[in-house]
Image (cartoon, rainbow, N blue to C red; front, side, top):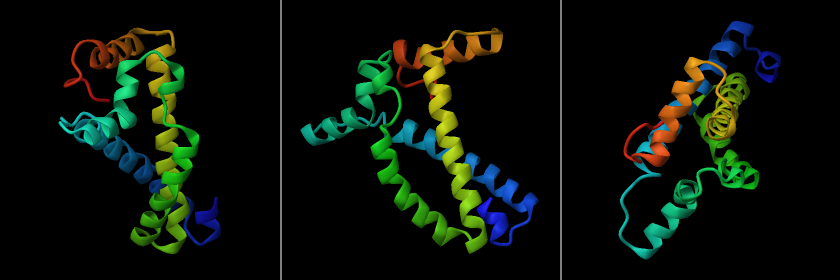
Length: 144
């Protein structure tokens, strides 16, 4: 791990990975709750909202519209890398950024599973039902 090569201990690098996952989780919830479902009235506002997230709600079972496109992810990763570099010391940057990236990928995998996977136990059935309520009952509730 690059953070360890740069001088972080294994414990510190692992902690930074967890911090990255937690920061991503909070960021995803905040974006989804307050930006992706914002009320818009203008043509451009409606268009932007649709492109960001509305398309997914219009076609929730379309696997091609379920996760953010890889090219968009790569483009947005650069400003996040810069932000992490500004917020963390040199040796901590790879672990913190890696944790955030890992959180992002796990979110996308989980989200895809909630739409297309088969529930294997009571917990996953409840989770799937909770998430699909967000799509089919009330967009104002059940934010993941």
